[in-house]
Every structure is written in structure tokens, then in C-alpha cells.
Image (cartoon, rainbow, N blue to C red; front, top):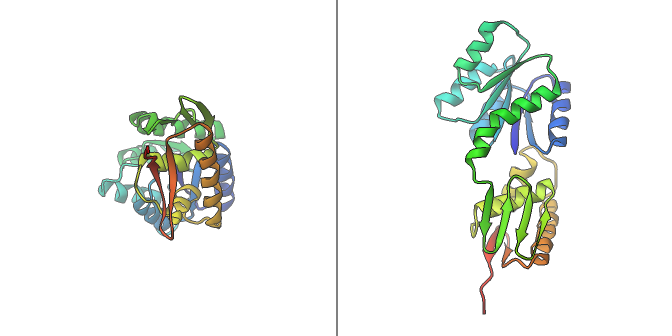
Length: 226
């Protein structure tokens, strides 16, 4: 699950990002409202954690803009203010929930789970292509011949492929989607993970495979019987 964290306190942002990644979230971080708006408009996030007091554009203004454009990504607002009016304003502007600083990490994680639950439940938990099933809840990749529980990034890559079977996906798009816009990770890491997934597909006798198209990217294809 991919989150955007918009928090201008850099030490807090770094700590929260580390904790969220430890809990298997993919996280992009920004430090002002202008960046937050650009990332939300151009990204594909499962949730946004949005601080109200940010430079350039405040969080409430960001919230108003994205809602006016029909962007319905779940948003959790963070505020150092405890007044009821501020909380009500955030909710009236389209926030799904709020947290007042300081807050406990357990509560933050619980609120993220809660605000993204409806979106998650609306999506079929099982993806199927060929004789392969990918379980979005357990991360299990399986056929009638066996199964593997995929590591987090393996699962995210395979989910991209199985959500878009036969469609060409560029290496850069995979890197951007799974590792984030501001990653310093080399594209070669995508090749490594593709190799891991290919071996697991082969070991469970799948009738699908990841096809490489030179200089263009990868696609998930079904094997043709002779």
C-alpha cells in the first residue's frame, strides 16, 4: 500500500517514514503543501497523511483543492492544534480523519488502517491470471501445484502485473510506483526482483510468465500450448 506523507518537520517525517516502511507501506515524503499537491495530482496513492501547518500552501488548502478536482484519496490530517473548530474544518473540507500532535504510533497505524479499509475492501482480494492466483491479503502467489508468500516488493510488482495482464509496463514505471518518485535506487534492482518472481512462478508450474520487451519494459503473458 502506497502512502504520501506531507510533513514539514523533517525529523518527524523521517521517523514516521521509517516506521511506516517497517510496517510494509511504500512511502513518498514531501515537506510543503505545494509539493504535496503536485504529488497527489500526479501520483496513485492509497492514502495521504497531511500536516495542516505547512509552508507555501497549508494542508487545509491542499485538501480543498484536491477535493474540488474530484480526487478522493483517503486523507488523514495532522495538526498541533487541539481546538474543536480546527478538527471540524478539516473534516468539513474532506478529510477522512485527524490526529492531534503529539500522538502514539499505534494510534497512527490504526487510523491509517481504518481510513484505507473501505478502499481495500472494495478491491477483490484475489487476482487471477492463467492458473495463478495472487492473494492481496496474505501476499500468497499460488497454483494447484504449490504456493509462495511473496516479500513486500515482490508482491507489489506482481500485483501491478496481475492487475494489468498483457499490458506493457516500463522499468521506470515499476521503479517509480514501488520505490517512490524520489528514490535513489538503480533500475537494476527491478531486474533482480523480476528474476526472483520468475523463479517462483516456474517452481509452482505456472502457465504465465513475465516477458521482457527490449528497451520498453515487461508484460505478464500466458504461455501458448503447442
